[in-house]
Amino acid sequence: MRTRTALVVTATALLTTGAVAVVTTAVATPGSGNTVSTGSVTGLLDDSDGRRPFKAQQDGVRLTGHGPTNVTTFDLTYPAGSFSGWHSHPGIVIAVVRSGEVVRQSGCTSETFGPGEAFTEVGAHHVSNVTTAPAVLSITRVYPADGAATPRIDEPAPAC
Image (cartoon, rainbow, N blue to C red; front, side, top):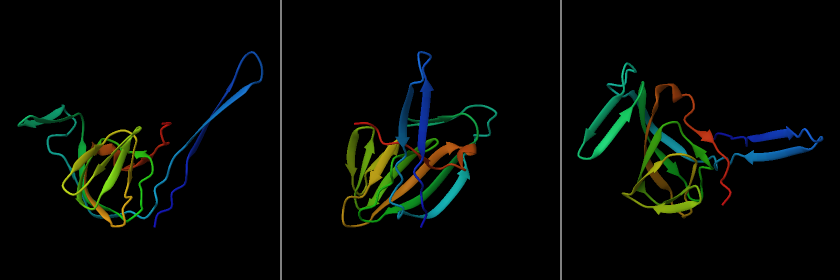
């Protein structure tokens, strides 16, 4: 089991009219720590060698990018009652629910997804399994090749 540490960022400003300190704090929200990732495989997307922008399009769907781009796929299991904590990823994540049900919160909006439904993860988001059964997601990450070392970035919860 991985342990995550909450990150606290503090900013202090001294005003020229006096020694007044203004302190703000943003606390990252770690996950429940018991999600399980299996079957991970990563490949460098063809035609993304960095010499020129790459693009592929067909039937109204378009994929474009600049520079070397990795694609990683894996299954992610959220046990009953588990959650991701607020986080983001380099690039774009596409999740397809194989079984169970999850709630994805993006900003101050939440949506529930069940088997055969898919969603994207762009920007800060939170995923939770509020049911009594496990939820299994098939994940596809498309991200800059130099972003492999940081697949997840802890983020503060939004002020809703």
